[in-house]
Image (cartoon, rainbow, N blue to C red):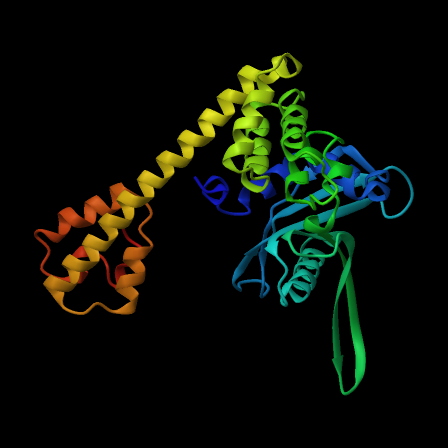
Length: 316
C-alpha cells in the first residue's frame, strides 16, 4: 500500500493546521504567536471573489481573526496556504489573496505559505511588480519549507511537531525505527481527540516510510514494555489505516471499471463522444452515480435524454 493512498491531497494538512493553529504558530512563528490572544480566535469565511463583486470565486485554505494582547493593530488576520510543492505562480497568488482579504475585511494580515515539498525552511518570499524599469510593488510573505527543517529538532516538541517532522530532513535522525516510534508515541499519548490523533498518525504513515524489515522491527519495538501504554491504540490505528487503503483501492478500481464501461457503451450507441460528454462522465464521483447512468443507457435514445450534454450538465 502506497503512502500516497492514505493521504492523496493536501486537505488533511489544512485540517490539521487549522485545528492546531495555536500549536502551529507557537512552533514556527513564536514571535507572532506571543502577540495574539488565542481566546479571541475566530475562523473566517474563506471564500473570496477574484473580481469584485461577481467574479470567479477563490477559497483560501485558512483565514483566522485574532485580537492582539496590546498595541496596534488591535485585530489582525492570519492567512495560511498549504501547497504540495513550490510553484512559480505562488508569490503572485499570495499577493492576490492578500489584496482580496484586505478588500473584504479591511484588517492587516500575516500571510504564510507552507510547502510540504521544496522551500527553504523558515523564511520569506516576495512578489514584485514593475513597469518601465520602475518597481512599484514589493509584497513579502512568510514561507515555511518543511522539507528543509531538521526533523530531530521538531519531532519531540509535541504531537504537531512530531507529525510534521515526518516531512522534514531526516539526515540528523539516527535510528529511523526508534525515531518513528517516538513520533507515534508523542501523538498517541497526547491529550488530542481521537480524530486529530488519527489525522496526525496519517501524516506520519504517509511521509515517514519504512522498508519491510524496518516495519517488522518497529512492530517488535512497540510490543516491548517500553511502549506498553500505546500498544493497543497504535495497533488499532495501523490496522485501520491498512484496511482503509485496501478498501479505497478496491472502490477506486470498481469505479474506474464502471466509468470505462459507460464510455465504451456510449460510444457504441451514439458514436464518437464530444470532449464535454467525456468530461461529464469522468466527473461522476461514485459507483452509485455510474450505475444510474448505466441503467438509463439501456433505454435512452439520445445523450440529451441521458442528461450528459453541456446543456444538462448541471443535472444528475
